[in-house]
Length: 333
Ligand code: HEC
Ligand code: HEC
Image 1: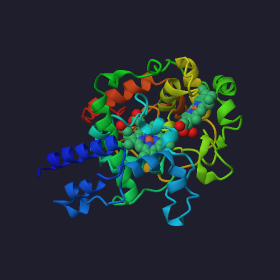
Image 2: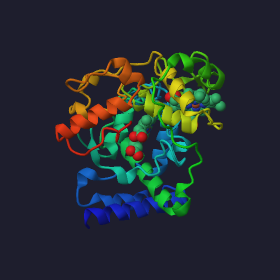
Image 3: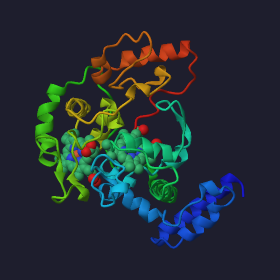
């Protein structure tokens, strides 16, 4: 079988699994994928359903308080679904429905090609402040299969694909985002769920049961290398999704409250200076250096904007360096 044939058979099997709502078809997946490269074989335990649970019950299964100490890969008690709402099934911002066909692709952050497993591990190390799952682990493969199954679902949705139940996409105001202006917005619109201290509310007393309302900062939040730590990514998410069930902030409010949230303390990722080996690919709102040689903008401007002049400077430099046509904006995770 050709690789693409193998893949489409795999997706069909995944679709069948999703449709049946059961794990019976997992056996078929094993057979389809077992040949020709045994290194790529799918373990029997790696089912779509297990992948879905890993994304919804991340803290319980691979969190820092998971029952099996060997399975403690995530460094926070967030769930993947804390950001990828409705277990990634909600169309629109941070949906995982359209993800599968985007990979493999070049990652400016890693300076190399990245497949779905590597992309998931990116969120493990940053959004979840944890360590990477082994590439051939049942857990990583199950999450990949689950994300694949969402794409099958998306294709089956056809016309309704475009029905995004969310606000118009965020457009950054052309000014510096103001954390002080975000403070009262936070108090009025966010604190009721995420807490006045931003530390969220656990579902039960036991951290491994995860959060009812996840923390936005503090020791159990995403780290400073995460996509959500970038003010444009955070504002985009907040405008589309928050306050949960009543997302109605203006661009200005989303921008300022994102700046407020991201000026609070959070875990730090080691070795961030190794990100974006080609620094001209660094996103304009990367809140940490080092930046490209000669970059004239302050750390504060990279963190809070305004961004248009930074974007323009990078565009000109990239053209001069013939750095290729890849957009520095194409990666936000
Ligand atoms: C009605 C309760 C509620 C309100 C109000 C609310 N959120 Fe949330 N928020 C949630 C829940 C619940 C989740 C996680 C969703 C899940 O697990 O399914 C979440 C997730 C998030 C996340 C991603 C996960 C994380 O912890 O980093 C961010 C960021 C966020 N909210 C920001 C905000 C901001 C900013 C506001 C105010 C503008 C706000 N929220 C208002 C309930 C709320
Ligand atoms: C704190 C929020 C947050 C958490 C928690 C989180 N992610 Fe993400 N994730 C992001 C952001 C932000 C992006 C980048 C989206 C973009 O590029 O627009 C992303 C991107 C991704 C992508 C790539 C999507 C695409 O279409 O390119 C995958 C897959 C993914 N995450 C999976 C996971 C998994 C699995 C987990 C749990 C192990 C997880 N994420 C936890 C915020 C989060």
